Image (tube, rainbow, N blue to C red; front, side, top):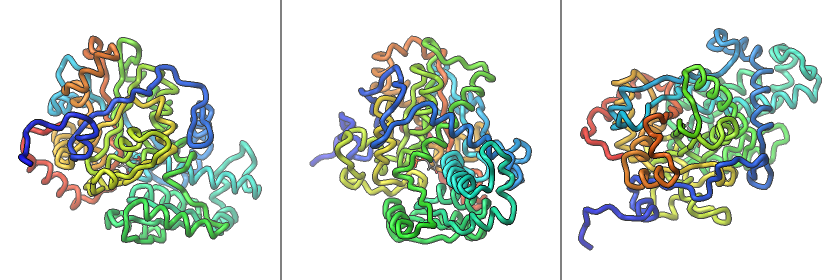
Length: 448
Ligand SMILES: *Cc1c(COP(=O)(O)O)cnc(C)c1O
């Protein structure tokens, strides 16, 4: 068949051809129901508030355990910053809104967005044990958990997880700091430095030849036979989702402090890198709870690993993998190299999500370099996925059509585009320099 220069038309065609595409969600509802289905259960705003409260109860202990949290009193948060020069580099027109960045690439302790979900689940498990064994009283001072007796008790338990890298870092570091034994099952694409960092903390790293899904399955199977093992299940965990959602009230405060309105004439577009879907779904769930109908969340996936988009296209009764679409799941965005989405996250997103778009690896590196050169942001490739969002929405026919249909086009000059940078803090300089070189070597005209 002769090659054609016109791009394939439908989202399905572009997905199969590993071409960047934008899908918008016809199932999105403006009003958020008070309880939302998630897998076989439901969640509501109380679940987000419970996670916020739990982080609060543990803050004094976290400040003692992690020197980098002393200044914040044990609060794990990241800055919200304006990025006008990067917005211009990305081709965001001056009358199409302002670019801001939510800097989770700076999140302490874990160095990625996984600090929110992963640490929350470890804290929840520790709290259950501590209350059950009387190590702390309800409402008491959780710094009691740093005592030798408490640590000895927690040390009888293991926390395990399967990961492409960053969730393992988050769980491993938090669990070992609390005194748990920790085991991280790593997929083949996990970076060597992430394994090293964990081993230095005394975390057991189990290497697997297969992909993320295989690493998770292996960890789940091992944990199932051990009553003293808690398995953090990235594909099924409500506690992770809850932890991620705690970002929302914090962002709401930051937006207010920055003087950014979110209302009918000031839309907020949030672009979230997506792997299995737990982190972006938890954040979207939280943001829709606190900001309502005028926040529009979009997930960003590599063209070879668009598992969430594949899931949203398939509906709840099917669970396709990117391999079913003839894709490879090969991407330098190791945090996003996931072949099959979380059904929990997908069911939760059905009424809340605005859309999903895909990005080529070459574009990730180019945007990584631009983020560095224009704003001094030092991020990992996965964290660059959201930067295609503004142009996907405001600079493509599909994006424009959606904006028009939503009645948002006229409000673009007052819009805020928020790219969520999800990781990077602990990337070694030698690795980062290679990312930067690769990004700078890209031809100047980036495709969205
Ligand atoms: C894990 C991760 C994501 C996405 O989170 P999921 O819960 O897998 O969707 C995005 N960026 C980075 C850097 C990550 O490590």
